[in-house]
Amino acid sequence: MQMNGTRTIAADPQTVWNAILDPEVLKACVPGCTEMSGSPEDGFEATVTQKVGPVKATFKGGVELSEMDPPNSLKIAGEGKGGAAGFAKGGADVTMTEVEGGTELTYHVEAKVGGKLAQLGSRIIDGFAKKMADQFFENFQNVVEGPKDPKPQPPTPRLATARRRKDGSAAARLIHRHGLPGASGARPQL
Image 1: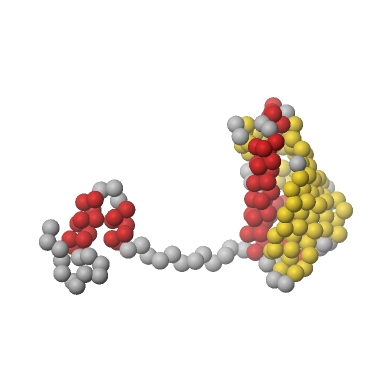
Image 2: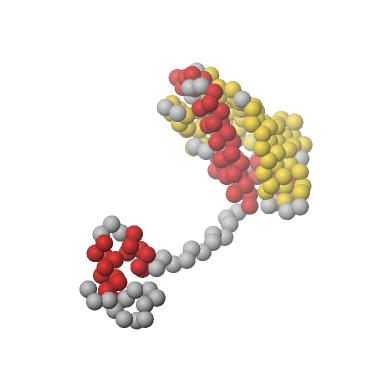
C-alpha cells in the first residue's frame, strides 16, 4: 500500500530536521509507542502496541535512516514483528522545504504486512495505515510547533446546564429561584 501527504509545520527546516531525528520526539509521535531508543546513525529500536480490527499485537522492530541530506530529506525504513499477528515493514521518503510560515513536510510511504494482519483484508489495513500515518504527522506537527493556545470556552449558563439534566425538577427549581431569562424580573408562580 502507498500513502502520500503534506503538512506545513510552523518551524524552520533545521528545527523540523532535528525533531525527526530525536528518539524522544519520535516516541511521542508514533501512536502506541511504548519504547524508543537508538540514534540516527545506528538506527532506532522501538516497541509499538496497536489494535488493527480484531488483532491486537505488540510489534518490536527497528528503523533505519538513510540518504540523509540535512535539513532537506531522508529515507526511513523499518520492520516490526508482532509474533502470531504477523509483521509490518515499510519505508518513507521525507522531504522538508522552506515555505512562507515554516516548513512543508512531504512524505511518500510504502508499507507491507503479513501473517494474521494480511488476512484482515486490504480495506481494513489501508484504512488503518492511513490513520497511523496521519496521526504520526499530526502528532509530529503538534510536538514541533508546541502547544496551541486553546480557545476560551464561554461559561455554561446555569439554566442551560440544568435543562440538560434528565431530572426536570432541577430546571424547575432553577427557574423558580432565578426567574426566566429575558423576563421582566417577575418570578413565575409555581
